[in-house]
Every structure is written in structure tokens, then in C-alpha cells.
Amino acid sequence: MAKKQLIIVGVAIIAVVALFSLPRIVVDNDGDSVSEPPSPVAETGEDAHLPPLTPAVQEEADSLRALYLANTDTEKNTIFASSLVELFIRADRYDSAAYYAEVIAQQTEALADEKRAGEMYYESFMRALSSGQGQQLGEKVRFYFDKVLEAEPDNLDAKTKSAMTYIGSSNPMQGIQMLREVVEADENHELATYNLGLLSMQSGQHEKAVERFEKVKEINPDNLQAQFLLGVSYLEAGENEKSRKQFEYIKTISDDPEIVANVDNYLERI
Image 1 (tube, rainbow, N blue to C red):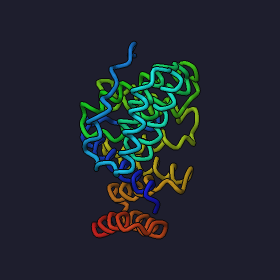
Image 2 (spheres, one colour):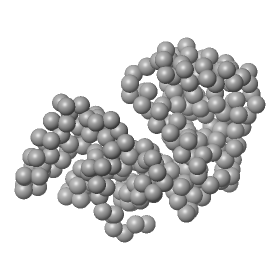
Image 3 (tube, rainbow, N blue to C red):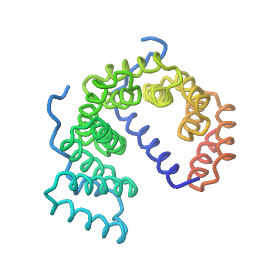
Image 4 (cartoon, rainbow, N blue to C red):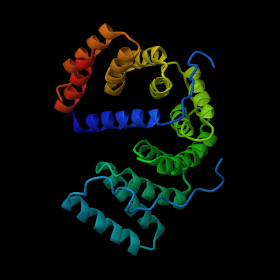
């Protein structure tokens, strides 16, 4: 499996752990604003939980940052900031990428840049390791995706990602309702369906989680996160034989040692 795929699976598992720490919410899958942006997330310190950048990447980041700080021309300054965004994306440093994406969005006020800022903050939100950081980043996501949805009301991806930031807030049902509206508008929307599956797992509704992850598998058989969580949901729903077959199937599509080890751990429980 490619390194990027492995990272995505890791993030998915972290997301599941985070969801299980939230208040229990019954998700009836069958039916049932910030006026000013918060101050930017500090560009240093937020990624402290990650390994240091490689010397080559650190040198490139320092060089670009120096050019960014020394330049007073807005257009050139934006170019340097954009280069930093791309560098930090490649390095899986989404807190730092979000910081510079927001700088650009504030300078240009262009919808494309506001959309990118929302995307970077969403990636950072999905990797948050504390509820406090998650809430702060969630506000950022909503702020920028609200702007996107004002201009593009039918942008279901933005609506789905914004919805997930409400789950750990004081108004989780708003997020759930938004996800329902997305799948009502597009029954094959992969991310919304996947997230409803996560929420069903979180609330202990494993049969509904199975339905959602089976749908994701139908929509996109290459979604390894959904394939893995479908196996977990089968097991939690008491469908041991289906769980066993699902985990064995995953081993036929991935030979990554870490993935195989996780799958084998579940197979031992069956």
C-alpha cells in the first residue's frame, strides 16, 4: 500500500477513536455563524506532536518563510505563502499549511483561496489530538466553508466537511441533519455516507453502520478505510462470518505489514 493510503487509514482510525470519546448520539439514518475568523492558528507549535521535518524540507521551509516575511509586495507574498502551503501539505503538516492558506485567503478574499483554507483547516481538524484544538479548528472550517456555501449552495463536499465539525460541538444534531441532507441530495455521496457510518459506530448502532459502509464499498471499492470499518462493524453487529470474510478480503487487496497486522488482530477475535 502507498504511504499516503496508510496515512489516510491511520487518520480514519484516529477519527473513530475521537468519535467514541464524544457524547453518545442516536443517529437515525433512515429519517430522522462565526462573523469574524478566529486569529490564525500559530504557525509554529501546532505540529509539535509530529516528527521533525527532514533537513532538506526544513531548509526549504526556512528559505521560503524568509522570503515570505521579507517581501512587502502582496502578489509575491502570496506566491511564497502558496509555496509554503504546498510544502507543508507534502510534509503532512496541515496546521502549518492551514496557517498560510488562511493568510492567502485574507489577502485575496478569492473564493478559491477561501475554499483551500477551509480544506486545509478540515485536514487539520481531522488530525486534532485534543477536543480544545478540535473545536478551534472546527470554527475555522465552518467559517470558510460557510463562505463557500454562500457562493455555491450545492457544494455537497463543503457541506459534508462543515457538518462533521458540529458533532463535537454543543449542537451535534445540526451536523447530523446536514449529513442527511447531503445523502438525500446525492445518495452516492461517498464522504457523507462514510461519516454517517462513523457516527452510527459511535452511537453503537452497528447494523446501521454496516449499511452505510456497505454503501461506501459499493460507491468506491477502493476506499480502504470503509473496507476496514465494515469488517469492524460486522464484528460488532455479531456478523462474525461476514466480518471474517471482510478482513480476509482486505488482506487480498493490501499487503502492507501494518494493515495486515491490524486485520490479523481482529481475525483473532472472531
